[in-house]
Length: 585
Image 1 (tube, one colour):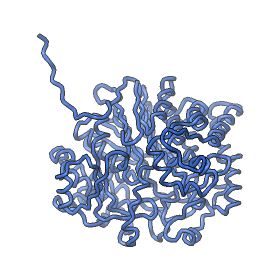
Image 2 (tube, rainbow, N blue to C red; image 1 turned 135 degrees about the vertical axis):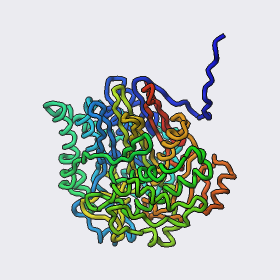
Image 3 (tube, rainbow, N blue to C red; image 1 turned 90 degrees about the vertical axis):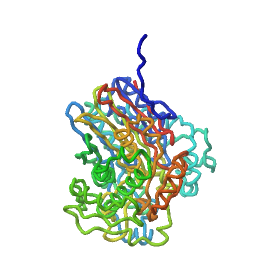
Image 4 (cartoon, helix red, strand yellow; image 1 turned 30 degrees about the vertical axis):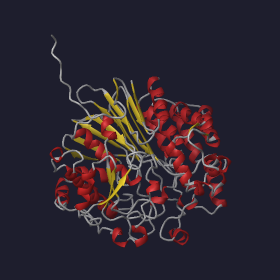
């Protein structure tokens, strides 16, 4: 009789991990995943498919993501064994008037036209295709154009978000026409169309077809139409009429920077993020702090494990608040922040029995300037403001292809706080909302300076080989959710889908990245799937525990792909807390 093989039993998950031999996709909406799969099935590479998904996702989460928003992107090229960061974040216009922002916004950057920074996403997608892709802009953008033109079914999170921000959408006619058809927020199952945006995308496709020359010349023509041609003139004229800051010269000067990523070694893994103009350094620094713990011995989601993870995160967020900003303007001590010696010092500040009563003071890594202690200046009003409604924003997508290339990008920018330029269907990036007006803050507004960004895609490697692409929406919860999913896989051997679905925590014991930058000392958000005795034990340790529902999404919505280190199979998972879905072949 044949001997039965005993299989390790995995906890159940709502969905299976999707596994393919050739390629895999995981994005924040199932139509984005389908769009990317079509490109891969047609012979495109991970970059082609990722750009296609990214543009489609901007249409599918349009309340929180603009086609002309931000798109920080990491790309891995197998043939060159190289990670590339496309810094998909725009800067403040040359005419930005800090005193005017203070007059009109008080303590915070005001909503509306004045928070506009350069729209980075189109340039990022075009540059990714031009340098590392194989298909045309038209091929990559067709899915986005069709979804905008023909519409898609409104899903629960989108319906809820639009209803929540309906008064803000109503301030501008073109925003209201899209998001409040007939004067009312759309209901679940209604078809949401973005006809003007479809026309804009189609015009970009026409420019490519009308341009003579090779693929590179055609893609540059699309870029130039948007940033130097008729579209830029339309934006310039609108800002001139409404006393905005943006000019056609600002747009003409924008090119997406192609940079090196930043990374850390965590045990047998190397984890990459975009540079310190985003919050990815929080993920990296926290991994270094936690590297000194035997996390397996603590036990998955035990009281000791949750406490250690939370306290390490709070130390990293203290450093983010004190040091992180646009490295062209701010001396960020990133090498010191990510060093082994500094991680050990930070680890020594954690009391295994007691939570920090407030955001701890920042550490002092090698090369650090005098830190900015914003949390000590937080007003009582700001301390009591959670901004929970903003956390679900943003959307994410990742791809791995048959040749071992990888793509990881987080798309964002709300369209309820910045006007849509009439006739274009586009609200330009309002990411100025994450800049500060407080003197001395590392993310204080300045012409040409980038805000400190929350979106932060990631790639991870094991033994020099691409191991994971992962990311999430969720504002300040992004690095926190990504950290837990990564540890679920590499420390606790969970399948990708089970790792994504596992109950999570998050901290809000730091100034929120979104105005009014609410700060809730010792706040620990914990999903209701945790055991009651775990929650009560954390309270006795000094954590200000707020229990959140696991569904619907409050605590991010992670998507991930893992290349199995032995078989090479692509394992993909997507978070059921949102509309995320994975696909593979």
